[in-house]
Image (cartoon, rainbow, N blue to C red):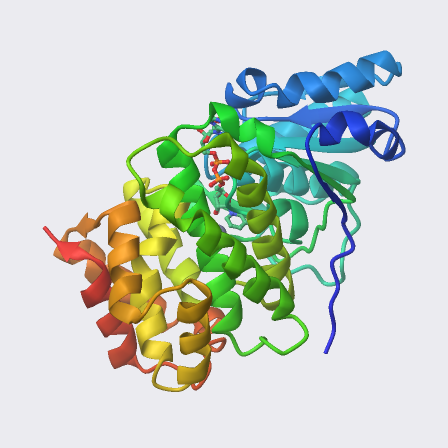
Length: 368
Ligand code: NAP
Ligand code: ZN
């Protein structure tokens, strides 16, 4: 058994300010990558630039990262970093900004690697510039994973790239959630939930790495009522939500995500469905299928979430993210692709039959 998360992670209020020294130790010239607006509004960009400016560290801001970042965006960011002579990259935002920062950090020091080839397995591991991650959503845990999920629109592919890029430093502060809409908090919290469930219902799960998802599910269940209620999430829960998301990231860093994530990518590509719900729609049916082979693991998950049975798990997800409708044609296309997605299918404890795959889609999507 092995536990390997080489990222230096701090979780606390005013984290960036408190750990300025750690941030400054990473590099001398920074490219900061963010989405279009949120990092400016929630104070995270200002927290970082204040430290850099006060310590005479030159920086440039690239604020063009879109949701589900593309190979073209990552290529533009790497080019900007190269022209600026950046030696490290700071990703501030949700998983999109942090994943894009990881991919740009790889391209920056490997100029012969084209962004369009990011999804091809390298002959040998490639180095990358150091990455600092400042998350502002409570879902992907990208600050604690080696994963970058990038979309190549030219070949209609959304997938993790095969390069492993752990951030050198993660500065996690719940206060950035203050500007997030309830729906963003719920959607991203469902992603974190999925990471922990998929990490347990996974052939790479073991007693050592389970300490993360099992503890994280306990924390998640303490936020459950607030997520389900009609009112805004109380600010006293922000840090717990962020911590849970980071722990969920550490969970998948050990095991990788499983079938629901594999199913989500085509849904996001076809319908633009945000990542959390795109995964969450498939989660309960995946748990139901796994119940056949690992009933004790499913019982543990339900008990940590303080749910009586699988029916309550289905109901909870339906209340959080609603339902998803697709055309018959889309659904058939998704099923055909999933049946040959061996890298995800081989992670299922006890395996998964074509009938199981069909069952998950039938239970999870409404045909228009
Ligand atoms: P996101 O795509 O990064 O951001 C979603 C939206 O939320 C954006 O419009 C963003 O605005 C806004 N936003 C971010 N922080 C905010 C805040 N504090 N207040 C208000 N608005 C805020 O969402 P995400 O769910 O965090 O990331 C999803 C991506 O991560 C997907 O591509 C998914 O596949 C990937 N992912 C990665 C991993 C991993 O291990 N690396 C794991 C799971 C998923 P701006 O655009 O203005 O910033
Ligand atoms: Zn996810």
